[in-house]
Length: 249
Image (tube, rainbow, N blue to C red):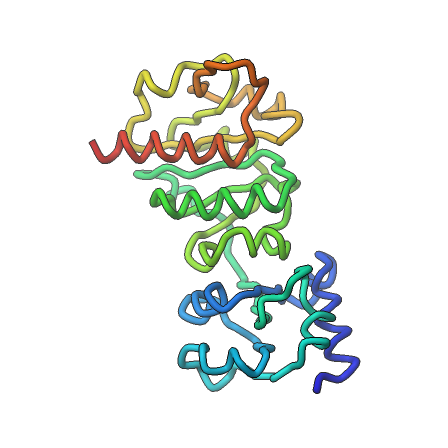
């Protein structure tokens, strides 16, 4: 049985303030937990219903295990329908982005994306297409938001996510800067090359004026119908797919 203090602590991690303060975030679901266990992340503790214990992979000795009942799991879960198992994971201490890492590959750059589900889907999509990292503006939604983590379906355990001021980075980058805009060059006309930063903007406002000025290669996904815009995660998927297709011709 969990103590009141344990339940209170885990529930506090539903909020960004306390995730940052304690350096811990929540993941849920056996598949995602198994992938984080096998990654470079350090899993702090696991809380599970009895029937899930046999599904756990081989665990390091330093991971604390707690069997819980349904009522307890409902109190600590971030989901309306808990998935039977929840883990606390240490937020890694990451160094700043090394600009040399930008060379020879493509990276997605997110300019104030706000929806956690969109960020999680973008991370999952980027990993599918072989991207190694995503760079976020300081005001982009937190990557350890439970909804973001859930939407990555484990991809966060393998893909690097950096937060940094975009203007200085884009002003000094050694690679081309692509930006997804409405009036750019069609992505189907080619010209991706072999490396670059690909900027995606905020769901409602698009790419900010300050960042728009730093785009060297404006690109667009040609519109056929009458829709005014594309969801940012869908846009990311189309761009990632086209870049991957060009790199693997």
